[in-house]
Image (cartoon, rainbow, N blue to C red; front, side, top):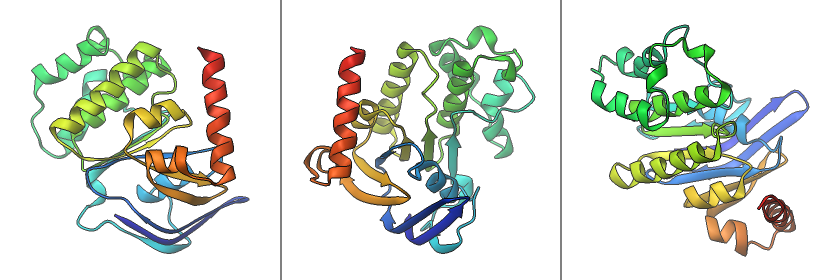
Length: 231
């Protein structure tokens, strides 16, 4: 997928991505401060927002091959199980009940399988949203701060599950997070957003720790100091 001369004005905020290629089979991290353009870029990729200028070339990928999970997930007015298998039903794929039950059990939702999905806690709703993406198996998965309200044990489980799935059957991921440690653990490539622009893209070590751009160095230093204070 390639993004070229993309521009979008949202209120007072302006996004401009000159040239960005998302290569197949990699886990990309979109990182940067609040309001830097990460989520706006994801919504443009998903066609939730329309660009004012420029284009996104999906290069053989269709929008139906992309799924996005958000910090506040969209859930149907139905049970946990019906929400989980919904992407399979609309594509007329038969759900594997053994697999779905195993995933629900692993992440503590099996006993809530028949419960109304919107009655779950915010962290549980995020779990369900991520499990739905894993069951769906699209070509591109975008995770927008979806791990933010989960307990640390569940976050670690999902991080490990993402890495396991990527080893078995690689797809393309875009992980949007303000957590430097999470981006570093999961991603092999990083796009650094600053005031509506991608000011660096490349291997995670090169962008986060070898780049001499003061804006990036300041962000990384702040995140490292904050992490040390939390330990």
